Length: 76
Image (tube, rainbow, N blue to C red; front, top):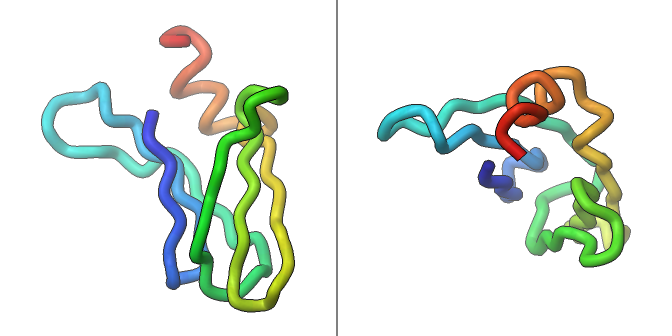
């Protein structure tokens, strides 16, 4: 799994285990504007915090996304 954030406002979750092409599993607009930073929580697995141009922090527990759960539950 790889997770990216970007100035396109989206956090994206990728499956990088299938061949050479990453597959987009899920994406979410955390309503923080353009995203400049992202960090996984060291204490709460599968939870990501992102900071963006609106000066706020967005939190996403990706384990609650059914597509992420389907893609990674058997691999992790």
